[in-house]
Amino acid sequence: MPAQLIDGIALSQQLRAEIAQRAAALTAKGKQPGLAVILVGEDPASQVYVRNKVKACGDVGFHSVLEKYDADLSEAALLDRIASLNADPSIHGILVQMPLPKHINPHKVIEAISTTKDVDGYSVLSAGELLTGLTGFRPCTPYGCMKLIESTGVDLRGKHAVVIGRSNTVGKPMGLLLLQANATVTICHSATPDLAYHTRQADVVVAAVGRRNTLTADMVKPGAIVIDVGMNRDDNGKLCGDVDTAAVRDVASYITPVPGGVGPMTITMLLMNTVEAAERI
Image (cartoon, rainbow, N blue to C red):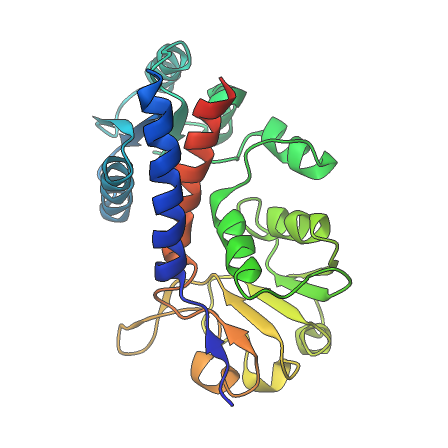
């Protein structure tokens, strides 16, 4: 039997309905959740991303601020603006869209955001809170992946999970979240000599490297859960992930499609972090 598709769109809608209820309750108390999104430059993909984030805020009853700046904005001016938003009680989350122009240090920008408003979960403190098991903001994409896995009803305790990729935004925090769920975790990367050796042992595989067909059917343990974080294009320009989905679906028990899997969850978890930030104040 082919693997069951994990519908990220349906799960996202379900979670956004919950977020909207929580936002309405806060708004009734005079504390409407607020998200500020900053875009520097004219990157086309970034413009789409920020537009979608602002629309999502409106859909769940958030207050949102979208600030667009020319690519020649100075680093000092951006840091000053972040400082102002840090002090604004109507703003509970601050997101600076990446990538930034080369003359601006992204690490400095991320660290300038108040830790109480770091709803992207990218700061050093947020990473440390995740590492040590404290309550903090989880990076949105791996947070969404965990929700997708949870939706299968499979208990991760004692399961072997393999993460392909070691980025600070997905791979590393994904591994930590799986550890928190009591999985046994292996993180593989470009220097791993035999990737298939590890993935064939995995009850859960999360592929997050940005290269199509990284995970093929012969690399998957029968019955495994496969989460595809990749966003690539095939030879015909069609959107695809890191997994050979058509073939792997005949082996796995659950699999996320691309599109319609992890993608819809990322903005949803940004909204989740923002409403949590408002609730904490």
